[in-house]
Length: 496
Image (cartoon, rainbow, N blue to C red; front, side, top):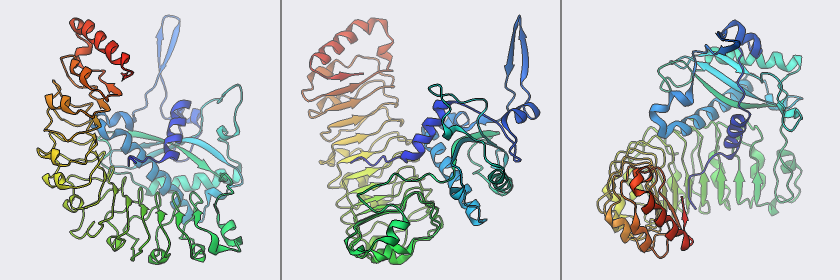
């Protein structure tokens, strides 16, 4: 199991918005798109013969462009920021007793915030411009027209939100825009006969002792549902994608609880504490805004899987991760790390460590003493080298080290998968060709000059990726490269 876990819902919405590729404009008073464009950003009209070109004068640069100088974090920053804005907007409305999820109409539409470098929101833009036609139909979900009552509520919240809310002042040094898809109204969950998936079903359940799973995710809950404690034999509790800010310590007292997801709840200022639970094995705290590891977490000594990614950790205490001897998988994806906490390297049972999208410039030598590590994911960092004694990790089979600054490798353990794309290799280190059990290698997007003819020697190789290197562009290498590809494909090896 690889721990690069994404928020599927946000990914789907983001892709959907890109697919539609429609941009519209509105002020804090939420003007309609065409009015806003005419009054605030009148297009520059250019005459070229009989043609008239309307050139945009919008001074707000899309955040995706503004982040080009830190491309390694661009996608992740966008995902984290849009998810936080969306959650904060809903929470802001909820606290003013405006429940957008209770509206009597369901609407989804694109939103674009036009923002100053200091994080101040200038404009809140929403809605589609022109007709949206897919397969000759205009699906109801793309109808952004709110009725008069809901429109008034929405505009009032937007105006207040824009006056108060601030985005981080570290995102861009110039004016920027950030886009996401917003959904208002009730979007019912897909019914299931396998488990309880809403509070009504939980209330109506007359045999709570037989229930082992509660899927209360995405219900717009603002407080922890105390009905949970009705189910004494509960093993799996999913409360992800809600608006819960405080988690009662008593949740740890559900004696048979093995799986708990609190992902995508605005818990923020460490308002979650854990007591000892001898059964809890899988805990997800992604996208919760926690700045520190919750107190008492190490008391859960049977914990095997821990997701902490997509939070902005301020640091770790000396006692963090201690006594978690059974932990097998740890996700610290995009966790604002500039160095790896040494206590992590002392986890005796850890098999998978995900450190994607951090700011690591080096890995501690202590990582080489981890006795059971099988998968190490350190991609999208700032690493210039790997620990010299990494070969001491005899159990290591998978190494993701792409999108770094590597130009050489130390002796490696006998890997099955090696990803070193998007680095600055000019040659492939000889020791790579000594990895006799290699099944997959990705060396694409480097500066490698010589065609890697040594790939023919691998007996277990199934997939190889080497596009975007210098040898792909050298005319004299074309014949040699074509012959290598042919030889590899004859052995049923996928070549890209």
